[in-house]
Amino acid sequence: MDWDDEDALLATSSKGDALDFLNLDAPAPTETETPLSELIRHWMNERHAPTILAAQEQLLGLLLDHIRRQTDAVQALRGHPSTSEEEHIRIMLVQTEVERVKFIVRSYIRTRLYKIEKYARFITTDAEIQTRLTTAEKAYASSQAQHTDRHLHYSVLQSLPPAQAHLDDQPIFVPPMVTQPNKSRAVFAYALKECPPVRLPDGTTLTLEKDQLTLVPFYVVEHLVERGTAELV
Amino acid sequence: MSLPQSLRTSVTPPELELIACQQLVEIIPLISMEKTAFISGAYGPLRPPHKAQVPLWMALNLKSKKKCHIVAPDWLSVEYLQDRLTEEISKKDFSSLPFRFTEIAKVLLDVASDDLQNPDRLRLLLKDIREARQAKSREGLRQLDHSALLLTRLCSMEINEIRPFFIQSMGVLTQLTRQSTSES
Image 1 (cartoon, rainbow over the protein chains, first blue to last red):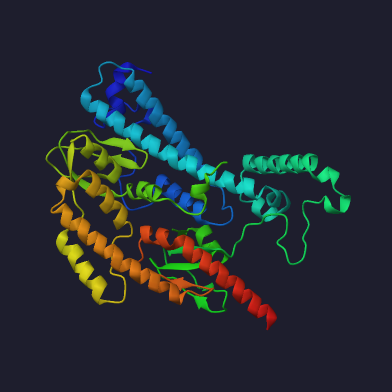
Image 2 (image 1 turned 90 degrees about the vertical axis):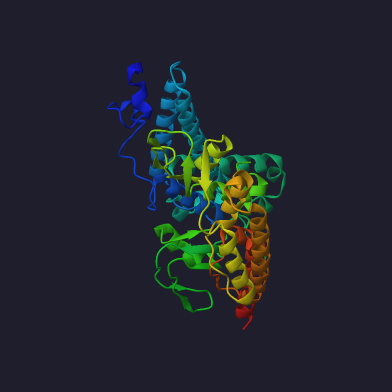
């Protein structure tokens, strides 16, 4: 990169737009949803929802690109001796933010991985849940399921009578062997907009108005969360 | 494992603090800084002694390096909180406070208590408010059934506090109802 453009990286007044670090079109801080606040919403939804929610590949890619751009610019500036003390503070602030965003991205992905590991066997058999996973996540789920199956087979199942060597029994009175997400687990849902009426388990309907908070079973508000009219808190 | 055991059931208070620190606050900068693009948006320029809006995390960072003063939000004042406390004690409903007031008040009292007026009194008031509200949210458990519970004006930290118990209780109630309907 061109060192003469060093100031252009951080100063808005200059003409250069090297590395796009100072993207002047960056939205002014408003109450509208930025990619980051969107990710925070999905992160919290994912943390509270009992099942796996739709993957946010595009959003994640956008933010990862942004993290890389910011990191590159910081690296370039840090190596440069003429950076003033004032600039150091800006660099430090940019770096702090990058670390914060990285934390959120990591925690979001780990939450999904945790659920994939937990429901691996169910994911391989259920087409509906697969639509909400990325290709890489699907591959991970099936390899996870295969590995556990093989491990169980070699360690225990092969020495059992064939009738007892299944991993997908559905005996009566006991929960099925394949762990499934429990969609009737309660969640705290917060209405971001006015929501269309939802049907409650006791047969009544409930209309959530904006800013209303309610504790309901997850499947009641699942479609609202998916559409972004409600979030889990 | 991919997600530590302690994080599986609920979100932790530090994580809620991290989210709350995305909110904007006003600061009086002591250093100048050009407008800079961050991932969450562009902030600045900082020109002392003009006020500027920055995210809370940035304000706290600058504050801890003595590079700014934080302007306390309107609700973080003795008069406002005193009013809320009276309301909290005299009325049955929750009084209206910002959704993430606990987290914001905590970090501001920790880092920037010298920018607040009468921080000790604020701490006491916040504690009293918390206790009054806690009693009410426990009372709310009586109304819990298997289908829905409307919780108006509950704050994020309070939700987090009652979450494990309320979710578990609702799960038990769901099981009980399912059994009684299948019997009848």
